[in-house]
Image (cartoon, rainbow, N blue to C red; front, side, top):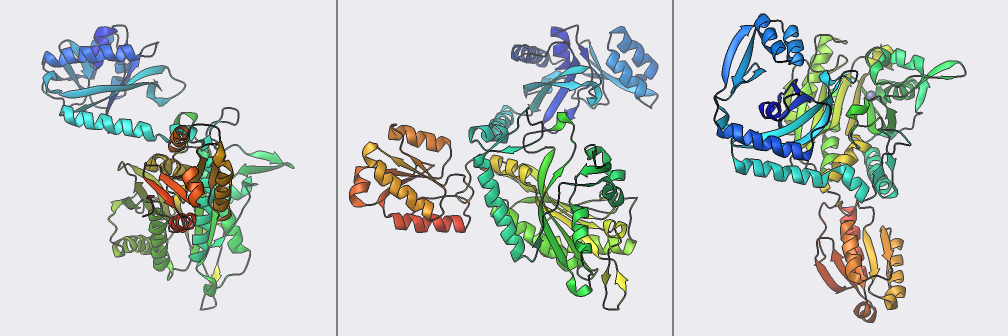
Length: 565
Ligand code: ZN
């Protein structure tokens, strides 16, 4: 690709172009962005180069020699890169007069390339630093066969269709507005009702699982964050502090220190433990504007957070409980496949070796007992304790980081919290931080893409749309609509003066699970006709019968709706 670009745009400079998981990219120093037309031309030129089957020749030369070569052809970025290489020698590849710096290896000749496609263009700063020049990046991908490429392109189409930013707009779920600020989510009514359903479910299940629910403030004195250690190891993710009555306050990046305060609000004995505090806690973290992405990467979000305080003896059982609870919550949303990682002790750590081993062991045992496959990330734990990270797999088999279970030996120490043991002495509790969905914002983004916006009935903003065929049926429609409302079903009434076909199309676009269509026949028989969003029809059924059916579907949080039989 770089060769083709240089042939077509000789004034452009090449910079770096690595292989990435989904293909490759190359950054070019060019003032104007590449257009769609440019990409087509580049692809055509690439085809010519492939047809010519030109060999790639590798040469190992001294740095000095390499610098001379790249200087002579005006490739100043390459010179900059070579100057930073520590070895004395570098390797270059030559192909039909085009020279590039590369560690290799390469295919023997260009004819080996069988199927490729240039996918998109984007701006990218030299070395990812916004103080540097903006370069023009071209993304592409390549496969050994045309069939595999086709399959991948179809997959990309599917991803595009499911893009939560697009569906978020189409289904009026959320908004991110420049007027409010980047990375800050406005939940529109349709998104807000889904969030409410998720929150209610989350809270009810936490109470059942022995958690106590909390609410804590969004700001606290800056000193608190010094004591917790966040100012030392988390500062770059925190917003600037603000002055209130000449005291510095900080927007919270975490909920932990507040939950410590709740722990400290009473004297604790071993009989009180484990204590499980849960909060849908909204936190604010600084993210560079370039990495913000819809609901997935934001600056303000609500963690489904909890902190468990337990003794060394409780630890294993508590971890098992958290893990089982995590799997229960995730599978309710239809996520049954996970990628699980255990991160173990890094070189620098706090706490005793014995506790680290005990905690890491407990994490591993919990996964083993449930036959959940996992990988170990050696030394990748945070300095304060080992952790489990769980990525959920969506219908397209994409992995999303959501749940985390972290053991912490540090914060209890820093805040000097204790409990009175059986022996009458003061002991230090162990703390577990855990989030199951991660954050409501991110989880919503994943849900939208997983379901492609067609939420199961229990989550759908509107569960039933009642529509009249003509003006004569308005009164009956209103009556049926009110029956649904009374039963707690989220219903919508459509008595607009439109053709029924149009109403059905609209409701289908809005991905409403059930349409109740009312006309002459329905009024005469006192029954209803139900149509599901996938087009199945059931004519003239009793309203009581359908109510029983849909209420059961919602209560059981079924994944897929079906027409009652
Ligand atoms: Zn925490």
